[in-house]
Length: 286
Figure 1 (cartoon, rainbow, N blue to C red):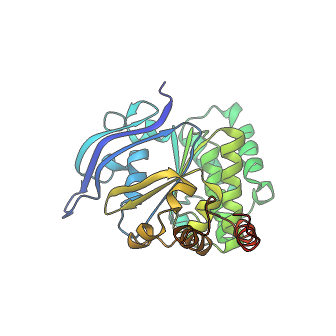
Figure 2 (tube, rainbow, N blue to C red):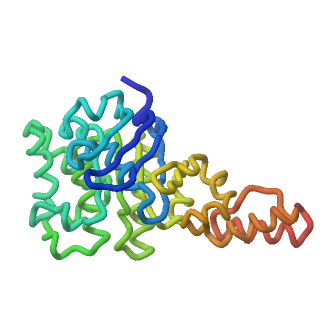
């Protein structure tokens, strides 16, 4: 099998009845085991790009499709959504719309039974997934009684029980408070580092992405504007601002100090790093 989890070549897509291309000439490779964040303003093409990685485009949303998308070497045009979804599990922004059962346990069982997982494997898969996400105590709860963060964990758990090679998440923290958002990202980081799971996440909260992902893709008008290690991308704070992405204030500060020749170190991502930067400048160490 391919070493690349996702590979796109000259990818272009325009939705049926769309006036402009949602994706234009996207060339992208995501290796197995990467933790990648995708960010951009509304309409930049983030969700559309994610849809090409799980087969929703072109099998559900139809339109003008050009180029190639390979998921673990499988061409998404030539293979069914069912086959692709066995490789890439998706968690969408509208969690309530994704839920199909009344009880947490039934939500997890639904996918396993639907995919024809042998009965003697089901119980161990359910237990393993619940433990990974840390929600064993929620197993017999009704989904309607859960908080937004708990529902996100259940959706993630149901996907993990299917044992995909890649997780695709579309703004999973949009409705969550900061603490719940951090919890979701910590779970994803642990799955990425300990399980080797490839994670691709569309998110608007750049501070969260900057703290957890290893690679950041910035999109603008259906094209990739930047694609690099997080700190390298954040150096371009003015270009990001013009593309509708607001950099963390600590990054904007360090970039301004760098332009004035007062700082030569790496861009700080966290407040403690920014504090260290300011102290070093004040003490003349840089």
